[in-house]
Image: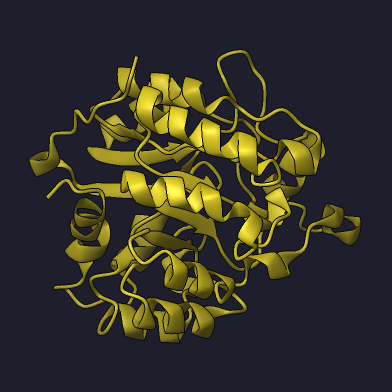
Length: 293
């Protein structure tokens, strides 16, 4: 079953651009257990991970839509990923609230190119998720450029983790993960060489927030999602630019199930965002990015 949009756009309260599928229908997890435990401790989140159908019900109750995905880091972690085709099929059955993004292994670029084509053409995914630190690749490495070419030609966005990460946090050597691979400045070159590829820089990019703002200000094809942090902890520079120069390029994201949209939205109400900017962040910018407006 190929995914097609079934959203009731007019009645959506928000579009959450950043939701992880961390367990499949067979109980297989997206990460090795030790990394799951470390992330749970870092975010102080619930250890139980909801299934795709449970996530759909959760967002349906809140009259929200959610972009759902996993991260394919098979080569880097030696751990089989959750199947992006299965995620797309599950989203197709819940297309009133879910929007599937795919994931491919950038350390196997030839296979990734073919998988990306199939995920777009056969499964109907609407974008792709990359996590440079977990997948252990530099996003500006020319070896992965053929993947971006496929995405650019298909007109689907690429969502990149940026900044520090809770995956591997607090473990010896951070489980070998290098957070420098998630510096948003590395995406400046990608945005320059693929000007039609819409690039989303996920999270407040601590400690590189200024770099993310510079890239988003300079490159018309770049965006910032606000997932992974409570709004009350957002850097002042990020709030200031979201209220002004970047008001049309900033997106709501929670990082569910590690951070709930309920918590995010409660704190958002008390954060110093302008009233006219709030609906842009919550849904209007995402509708435009996804071609739903």
